[in-house]
Amino acid sequence: QVQLVESGGGLVQAGGSLRLSCVVSGSTLRFNLMGWYRQAPGKQREPVAFISSSGSTDYADSVKGRFTISRDNAKNTVYLQLNSLKPDDTAVYYCNARYGNARDALRGVLTGAWGQGTQVTVSS
Image 1 (spheres, rainbow, N blue to C red):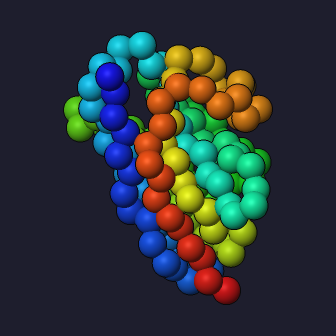
Image 2 (cartoon, rainbow, N blue to C red):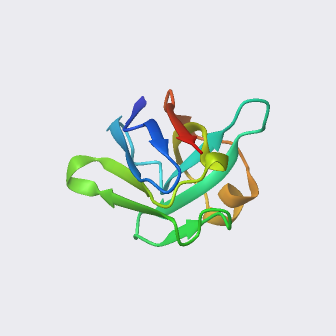
C-alpha cells in the first residue's frame, strides 16, 4: 500500500510563491509517473504537472513557465514550486502517483494513488 502526504500550502498574495511537497511511502515500484492535480470549488480536478521516473517533466499550459515539478528520490519526495501565483491558481492541490503516461495524465485521466490535498489560496 502506498501513502502520499502533501504539505506546503497556504495563503499568499498574487505574484508570490509557494513550494508544495509530497512525501511518498510504501510500495511505489508499480508507479512510473508522479504529479500534481488541483481542484477549485465547483470545478473538476485538473492536471497541473508531472514527472516521470526518468525525470522528464510535463505541464499544463496554464502553469508553464510559472510552476516547476521536481523529485528527490533519496527522500521519496516530489515537489511543486509555484511562482508568479494568480488568484486563479487558488485550489486544493493533490499529489498523484500512477502507472501511466503524461499524455493521459494531462488529458485528465484520473487514476492511481492520491494524497489528501493541500490548500493554496492566492489573494488579489
